[in-house]
Length: 483
Image (cartoon, rainbow, N blue to C red; front, side, top):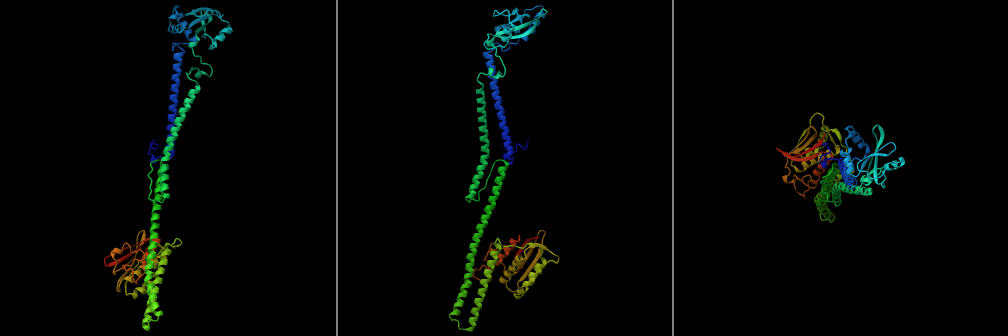
């Protein structure tokens, strides 16, 4: 019973409808009871006011047989002193004792007709108590003075309501039966309409809230949320709608941010390409017009053109790589692999460049096998970009540490250096495209895409890339990937 009467928000819809139907049936039974009481009062009032003078009067002859026998056993006491007989006389009736030949041998009360002998067929006809005969008849066997006789009761016919065949109810109703049927049908229709309207209103209210919410979503108002106070199913629909709205709003925000990032990326790329291309055009034009006669200057100009073209090519290559990772057609090869030897191989490949820049390298990789889920190509690109970034922005003699740290649920790879560090104000945007550690937009060192590519690759593998500092190490990039 406790489960049935829980709040609407926790109650299933079928339970609510069942309770509503039970309530409807309760009111229906109450309606039937009211109609029954009205009809019963109508019948009683009709019988008392129009038919029987004394409502306690007995109109069956066999009742008076017992009274006659009682009076005879009391030394011949007069039966007229009996209460039942007195009621009969007050109502205008009397009793007749008939012998075997149906002749009246005695009367009790005031006899109002002159019939002293009854023919058998006549008596049977009278006992049918038709509505057109003057008196009501009731007969019962009676033993008087040792002889078989009959006791006949006679009462004015208009004082008795006769119940015959199937017309019992019709005989006693003040109004015609169709009247009561129409009243019952009318009340039932009213109750049904009220019940239907009530149930429809309860269901329509949450549906209206859902409809308004969906309309707002169609119009692009993704901040719309629903608060529904109804049955469990409607509450679940509302919660599902709110979850869907959260996802859509978040996806729309991410899409909007991606579009803005792409636009900013194009603007930044155009800006960064403009400087080297302008330089290439200037040096090439000077050579083409023959304004550089010195062979040494010509070689220097050609060197400038070559370096600038390499910078442009690298920038375009990094841009293509960044867009490739974000492409939905990009397929990754992520699975659980041993990672310790993989890190050692990467450091072996980059050792020549590190040594050329005169960096002090510390590689810390545990001897035991360590496994993690990663894509070799993506992770290799991440580590190489971080090392290249450190080599590009730090002076000779900088200490570079690459350490593999196993954890319970993930593996961390730290790429740290003791170089010049990254200004604190750039930490929030350092992983954005075209942001450089020296905050210079016009420098020739780097493309400003290395850290952005590293972060995207790490996130594609289900991990994350963070920046911190600790002690002498001014820059610590931490790659975290799951095991």
